[in-house]
Length: 115
Ligand code: DGP
Image 1 (cartoon, rainbow, N blue to C red):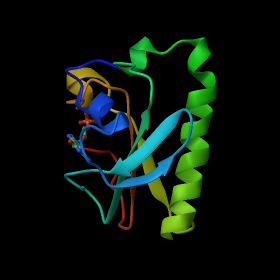
Image 2: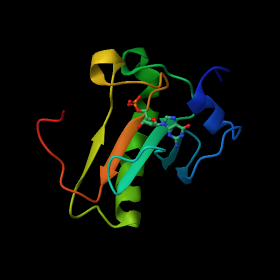
Image 3: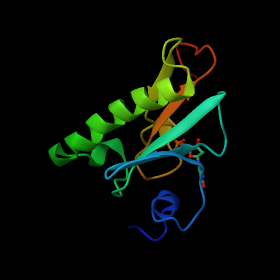
Image 4: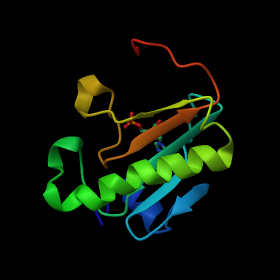
């Protein structure tokens, strides 16, 4: 755990969040500033700052991101109509929280290219 990291604090239960899924590798909770009717953040329990800090040992966690996203999209009812699963990396990617996370967005039409 990194003491200054807000997502580490959510993982540790020190800051409340609306948790939608959790297992030994990941938690998923609703984004505090939703950008779609459904907007969840899938977050590894382990502190990893960015996509650039992943290594081969993180492969099981990354596989879990996709299976958890599929499960959540079905449970929340937007799997078949479609959704977006996206990671922002570093400043130009739009990252503002330096603990790896994946946005799961659903419930509206997504645009391409993204802004
Ligand atoms: P990114 O720009 O990819 O780093 O996305 C960070 C997201 O994290 C942003 O959509 C807002 C969300 N967020 C930041 N702080 C909190 C928090 O304390 N609780 C929750 N639920 N979401 C947060």
